[in-house]
Image 1 (tube, rainbow, N blue to C red):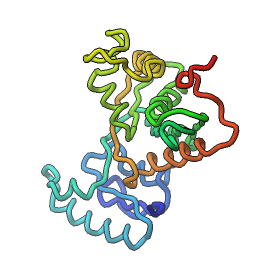
Image 2: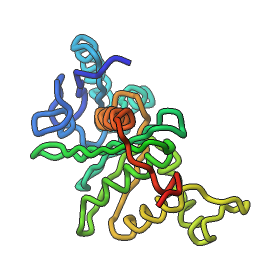
Image 3: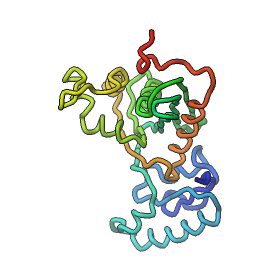
Image 4: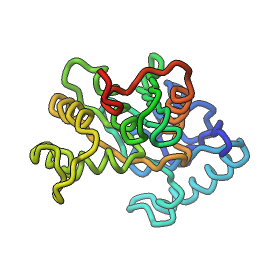
Length: 237
């Protein structure tokens, strides 16, 4: 898909077409925590301008009441994070199993922090989990975090209590079969006990700049040379 270079904000703190997502002059600060925000990424300025103008009209018609279903369908937005620290994560595996990598972006007005790493043989789900772990491990003191992931495996595993149940049952599922990746789930659950983490699912490859950047970082890491072993997966010392 074409790389998104323009971000249209039709409803937010300041509407307009932006060429950056992160940073004090980017689109994110205009929509993050803004109720009813309408925004989307595009490959061309013309597309972004057209979306913004159409979205402004929709927002005006919806003022003073809940947004209509049509407005929701074009919003391409993610849940508001409020005052929480935002972390975007993604994992990738070339072959599944195969060479894999993870990517993490922590937006900041002082410069976005990017983290990534790769392994010679692993799985996509392990990299999705490890991305969350690496992101949360950056904060030594308890923190309130909004963590965005496009992995249902990760988000549902936490929000629906699956991982806690697996741990309680000796890393067995309800049908008695072994739960996969207990080493990483254990690390993630421990971090969730330290921090106040809100896991939020975001659709992958759908124009979300944070998710797209994490995907790039993960893919690049997976394609690296002389990658180390994922000891938890390969079972090596």
